Image (cartoon, rainbow, N blue to C red; front, side, top):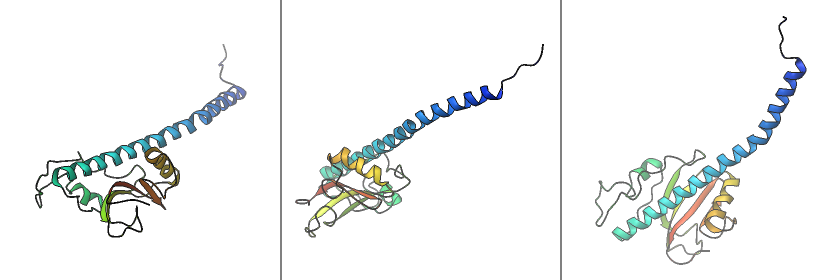
Length: 174
């Protein structure tokens, strides 16, 4: 009996079938990965908002801004060790998100109005800032949280690769 192997035509047909299946499956897999990143980001934003509101409810004051992952991880969201705050009953977050799903950072801003009401400079606003967010993800996050994707109205504002998600505002927004 002679050795029997696959012919070149049989190999090419099998490779073509595998290529067609991969072309059908790959885009759906990448869409699922992007949807998961957006869902996880929304969950992080909601956890930070809940933590900030809970801290305010307990202490009667808003947390100060934290402009880096390390500063936010050492903030009133997590610990109350450096300057004890009356009424603090945290931690309000299990841990600060180490980075966004697109390798950016989450930070928290407590400042005079500048993002959510540009004409209200004396009123305060608190919001989460996420850096390095792709444009396609920005509009999807906005739709999930606001119902629209304007980027200039509602509780989500974005410019460049930065997304700002409103937690609380003194007065109106524009």
